[in-house]
Length: 89
Image 1 (cartoon, rainbow, N blue to C red):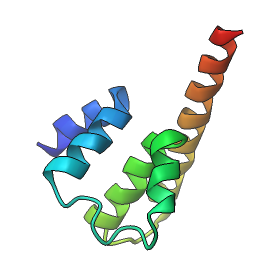
Image 2: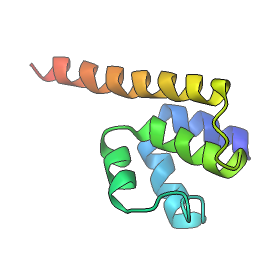
Image 3: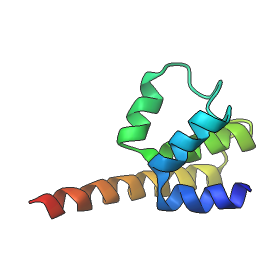
Image 4: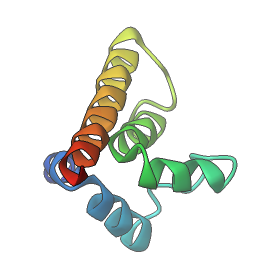
């Protein structure tokens, strides 16, 4: 089941966030404030999913591999938002 959400999260991260928020307790206790998940939903959805995955699956332990994947997620989020801006112009 986790692999299905992983693939779905890469393809449609915002839809996956909404499904996880509505149907599970995936985000409970992960963030201290409500502002970070909201910012993550709109600007960094893949990074938000990976951050919550590390907090849930790896008990918040940030290894070199976890940080490398986070960097790739941020780059992916920024590149996808940049390509959407260029299409509108």
